[in-house]
Image 1 (cartoon, rainbow over the protein chains, first blue to last red):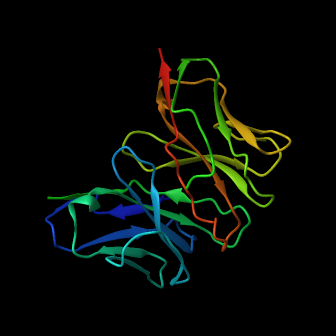
Image 2: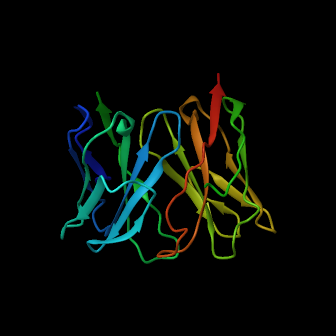
Amino acid sequence: DAGVTQSPTHLIKTRGQHVTLRCSPISGHKSVSWYQQVLGQGPQFIFQYYEKEERGRGNFPDRFSARQFPNYSSELNVNALLLGDSALYLCASSLWGLTTDTQYFGPGTRLTVL
Amino acid sequence: DAKTTQPTSMDCAEGRAANLPCNHSTISGNEYVYWYRQIHSQGPQYIIHGLKNNETNEMASLIITEDRKSSTLILPHATLRDTAVYYCIVRGPPGGSNYKLTFGKGTLLTVNP
């Protein structure tokens, strides 16, 4: 079975632009979470979605937004890009609703802001 | 902030067991201990999780102390491909405030030939 897929794999943008990152969960998974990982740090939680509703949000500015579609895929949008937004953006999917709901990660999208 | 404390780095000889410790002294009764690892620039890979009993799967074993304040991840026969950053994470039940995965800096395990 296919794992979590993310697109694109790499992306280069300039300051002030916006970007859309995409994620397809593992088949049967209904929850998607987004994480940001800057160089040298562990991943930081941005959002979690389940059944198209936001179920959790990390400490990120309003420039970051996301949505989940009826097929459970998801998009992460970042507006007015800053140099500090350069990072690996990770998507994770899970079943949701179980007491032990394991999240499985995709390979990530490497965003470089110039 | 992460609720766990791990050593910054560890070394292990190829073929030997790697024992990675983690302290989580403030863990609550309904919180699980999860372990992930991340090989350079790849997405984190799930290894194992547990509540209070010891757990074993094809990748590793997880030993949780009786008071649940610490745990040890054991890779029984480390290979060079096990070189990675290992994250120990305490996580609450779905829908709760601690449901998200909160990563610390993890332990860089280097397996030497």
